[in-house]
Image 1 (tube, one colour):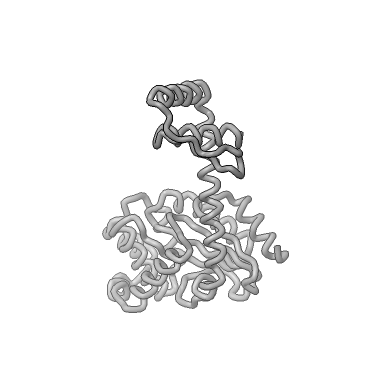
Image 2 (cartoon, one colour; image 1 turned 90 degrees about the vertical axis):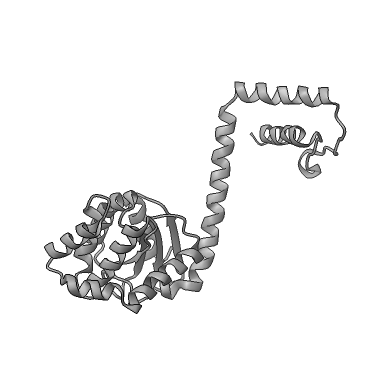
Length: 261
């Protein structure tokens, strides 16, 4: 496969520049310049015919590139985590559930209008029940517009009334779009003081918390929701999961961190 890809890359260079180029350390081929138009045309036809006959090569190349880029982003995130570990795992302003002195902490970045966040919430609720000694932190990251931002601010306001978890789950269970009327209807159904929520939503501390969440997400290279960041109690072992994942995968990572792995 590597040999095939080297041939394709080399031949593509001919299409673009009319110059054959290969890394001497991998192919031991010196640059050859000034191919005639007819030779370039022939090479182009060779590439065309090969790819038409073997289109799976492009799929393999694309998958390999995706994997390489994902690994690079994963490494960058894991490198950034220790620098912002207190904000990620030990921020008193962040809504949480579970044991404050838990051996494992799971932080989720999410958006109430994200369909993947809604889907994974059932998994998280099962994990919370199965792991009472694990702490789960919830970082509001409204990336789907004004309705998402409104819902996030309302949730943080609900936290001031001690009803964040109930409100959080209700918002994730509600159908999109999360209009203001729908958010207030949910709040009233849970017995929240809507007038107090409206006032708290515009408070400086909630605005600061929202801004901080985006700053942290940016440092991690978060590109979407949900995104999970896990740590052991001593903040010496970490895991980073960009995107939706399974209950089995999260539980495996939690168990490994409990064992110090």
